[in-house]
Length: 246
Ligand SMILES: NC(=O)c1ccc[n+]([C@@H]2O[C@H](COP(=O)([O-])OP(=O)(O)OC[C@H]3O[C@@H](n4cnc5c(N)ncnc54)[C@H](OP(=O)(O)O)[C@@H]3O)[C@@H](O)[C@H]2O)c1
Image (cartoon, rainbow, N blue to C red):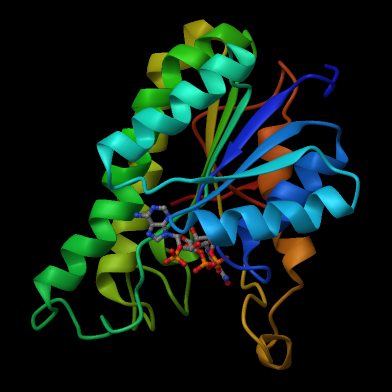
């Protein structure tokens, strides 16, 4: 499948050290037209400009996936410019920073914010994108998930003494479930839908010292799922192209 004239939308690209920015770079390097999006249009445009300086076809746009009007607007822009969408990477996630309390005492407003973005925001942009994705003929949706949404992960998973904020893992497990349901529904349209864990990735300074992989390495598995050929899998949860039991 040629990458020329393929169109990709990536959510949650507000930081140069973030995984979303690197996914935009790797998709751009494959020759695609990439819509790099962030809540703050200034950040999106500045980051897109960096990638254009590298010779890539990347434009920056505002997108808040919690806001129906913002979602409608970006889909309208892509529809007007290209009439289709080939790849949707749902990379955005709600902030987990201050929500480390166990379920019995977790702040439910914080939990709601994480679930609103990670699950419902992803659901919202995916629903809105489906008409354009159907026009691709071979579209791919990648939901960026986490080992926090696995039962089996010994450090961050849902069972055992997890070190992940509960709402984050619960939202990611629900995202895996949403992935399976969308995959079933969209199968007949040739649309493959997978969840991908990037692995523990150095998206902040000094994380390599804690054993994190590079952002380039973390983004690779997402790009793999975004560029699957027609024989590729759908409905699963992957890390480094390996199926995870969640
Ligand atoms: N880094 C890791 O080790 C790791 C491991 C497993 C999974 N992941 C996953 O990888 C993805 C990228 O994470 P990252 O580490 O690169 O961190 P990140 O830069 O913080 O990525 C999260 C992005 O989501 C955006 N966002 C939050 N609310 C939003 C909304 N309503 N609409 C649109 N965007 C919104 C944030 O934008 P603002 O700046 O505007 O808040 C930010 O750009 C996430 O899904 C994360 O769960 C990361």
